[in-house]
Image (cartoon, rainbow, N blue to C red):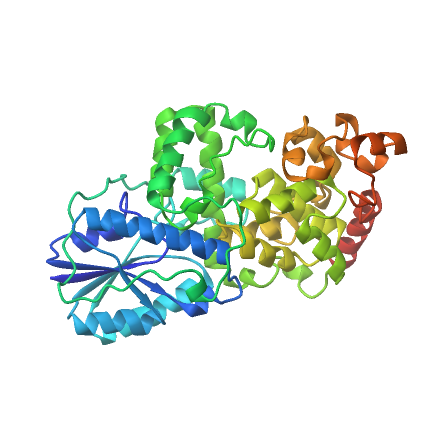
Length: 468
């Protein structure tokens, strides 16, 4: 039997249900990845994330070759390219991993119809998330969840599939198959402007996974919000593209079995939760989940303030450090993501979709469900509603709490490196002589705050009350 494995966000050989099924009883196996311009140049186009994808595919190709196989690369609409391979090589069965975004589901329906018309049996497998049946997790009223804590309770009770290792040997590709080559980023019409981006691929991802579990998991619950310490796993880009299995990560931390593992499982559950939400509410991809705010909430259109936020020139050190980290590394600490999202939506009153698109442009881990869910959560227009005042974060207080020694701010905002600790969260409060001594004159070397947080907070409470 000839089988085809259509790869998307499952770029690994360990714990891969679709791969395991595709190799069973196969004489020839075609592992195929298709570069789809509709995705590469769509509304969430990203040079940094695409470079991470290319790295991950190159690593996967090496893993496949070590097992007697090889990655097959095509560029074009997968309903055309994959179906053509099915017809040309008389493939009898195609396997792929299910996904949840509106784009993915429309694409998968088109491809499935094309493959069946070409004579192939199509089998869809779990593997992108921890819970295999996200759509079947329901409230007692048989509705999808929209509150995280309730989802968390139900999610923990879901059955888990066993974690599997990597196959030692894979069936070869047909000898007359033109496998193709991985393109350079420039050939795809994209640019990579991230200076310190992590390298993609399962090999690097598994090293990161092993290092985190052995060295950093202990203390995670207590230190995960400390941006200066950065005690996070840094695994999110590898989870996004399936370079590592979220189910395997859960099992690894479960084996530790203490409050540290429960804290990380809770963060992993947020990923499944937002996928569950987008699966059941696809309109969230473009609109506020809370209907009462759609078309009613007033947004500012101040482009200069938005540009200052994007470039890390707001005058609020923690905000600026985070935004500069994003463009330097293609990544941002989760606590910092909350701070900058609150600042954009509450202090600047800008549309949350502006921030969502900017994050998706730069983030290596830019995942539509997770990014959209978090932006709506901080904008107070999404699921899991909390009192509005809880989602208006004071940047100076957040910095004092989560970067008390200024390590994070000084790392990314060079102008502030010599500012005394007592003024670092609010440098505009420095006396003139202290500014000169620190080599940081506010308004010259570092910007004045572009907004008054106290006044913005009051206006935000009024704006939301007016809309809702």
